[in-house]
Image (cartoon, rainbow over all chains, first blue to last red; front, side):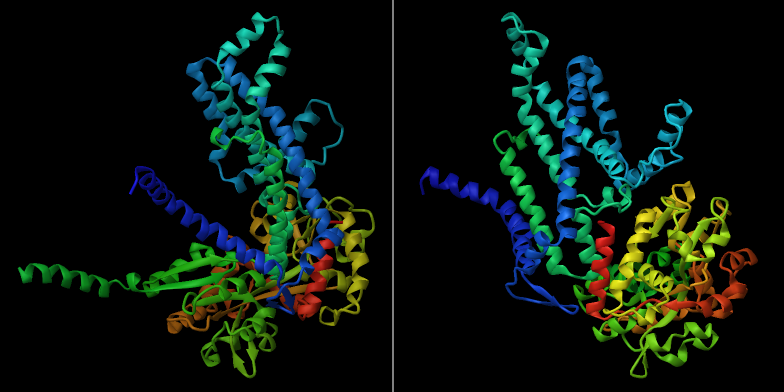
Length: 284
Length: 350
């Protein structure tokens, strides 16, 4: 056996557990879900077959399609707002906070991760309620005359999501920023670039992989989340994961739930391809 | 040498035999009210067993869990009383010895033989019940208004209403508001309920699960919960005495949950003992006042095991009148169920 062949075998051997794991717990379940998505319901029974009816329904039934649109709208808004907030926060921690305090700053940034996701969502419900902290503060300051309707709206869902994902994005962007040599900014300054030009033409392009990676993860986690829209959104509108849960928990319509899940995965796959040019998952 | 090995093994064997908790575990698929340790621990101590509890919501989810399980995985099932027939049809419930169940002590309406019995055989027994009606904060709304469901969509309480997120009782309530009995809902007259349902949705602020509805009512986010009842407000009564509920003149819905032994249980005798404990006055009192949600016990002899305050919160004295005015959940066939859920989904996403 040549050395190259031995290394190849060793490589396969080392990769085998991960490959087996992926095949057993991702590929096979996905294929099962795909097959189920083409089945149909007869009464309360699932009948196997190749019926595209579930997919046709998703794209022709306005209630279903609207759930997809709602998910996309919320996810895009959350991703953009989270990036806009997280970038300066990460930059402040990376460049303004003294090195010895950066660890503490990051710890404070991720502190919300330490609480239960569900508990945090219910806590937001109390904060954003008519008698919550936000409305009481605004009323107390005389900025509003009547309490704002925030809880049980899309705004509440977006706030809950952004609170969570800003933390995630801060970490990914910080990891990118901290690796950046200060010589780039110095060289740009030597060449006469102002602060904005340095950021626009040097820092931002170099940190884009970290931003896109964080944005992609935000997109994936946000579009598949069921808890936040359910608790904070007050069912004011349905998102795709809520619709999937309704089909599974209430209707027992597993073929339709599978088809909706396949559509959800297709959207994530499209997002992956759209961002793959900049995506650097090793930066996470 | 042989003696040295044998002694520890003998000790281990004796220990295993002497500790039934190692040998016996009861697996129960339940609603959240059964997870209160105050309810479960007395049974565990009496029989020296561990009761493993798994919560589920919605009959479809419960039946799906059973469908994906092996025979013997589950011993006890708690299920919506109106869905017992579905579980029996699917072969998930074992026959119970009716003579050993204290149904003679039950409120007559709660024996529910038409639901718990199939072909003359008893498969489940009612354990708890209550009402899906109107819950409200009596300091924020006029209690007299809550006696008429038409007030809810009159414009007076727009944006102050939450709808309980469960299609069967709420569509049932809407049917009652239109003069249709829950048992008379059909695929033909269901479309006539769409407009009043959408109107109710338009007047509402949110459609919420149990915890969100409780939170909204307790924090003043909303003042009325359609589909609520004692199960929603009783657990909050101590901190929020202003929360109340009523059955409007159009009527309300009666929910009831049943308990049975799962077919294929490897320990049917122990499972039956658990069922008997739950429907005994002791178990019933603890179940009625569970930390998850309160509800009336099916066993009328439970009154003595409850305090005066607990009976007041449950409106014990008013039960004869309430039982007369409340109807059971709709029991749709598969096609009607699908149509109802589609209408509900459309309402959620309107």
